[in-house]
Structure formats: C-alpha cells, structure tokens
Length: 80
Image (tube, rainbow, N blue to C red; front, side):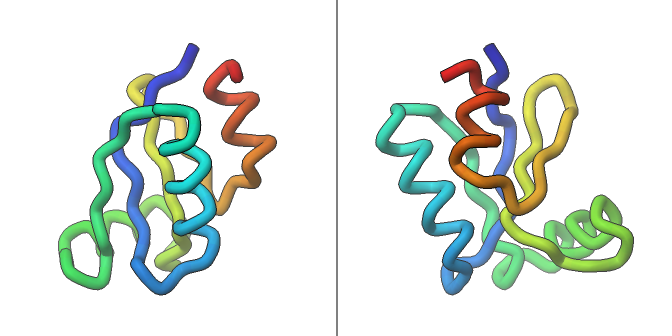
C-alpha cells in the first residue's frame, strides 16, 4: 500500500478539494502545501510538471507522483 508524502495544491482548486476530501474520508494522512503561499513549492511543482504549476501534484513515499488524479486513480495507487 502506497503512502502519501506531500500534496502540492491551492485552496481555490476544485480537484485539490476533491482529492483532500477523498483522502480525509479514507483517513489517509498527508502533508498539504499550498503553492500560492509557498514560492519554493510552486517552483518545485513546476519542475515536476514541465514548467506548469499543475495541482494537485501528489508525491508518494516511494517518490512516485500523481498529477490531477481522479479518485479512482488515487484509490488504486493507495490500494483501496
């Protein structure tokens, strides 16, 4: 089962809100970093996504990444 290290996102992003709600409902712990409030995190997100600040960008403990995943993709990755 995969575990989440960090979620990069923004408060205004609907996909971020949906992903956080899904994780909260399934009691999956995560560290949230708002890229609107953290310039280094925004730059890191851009590096991971070919120059684009795509959110949510979810980093897992095994260093794999999901970008703008659906709930189904998250569930599969997390083994739910």
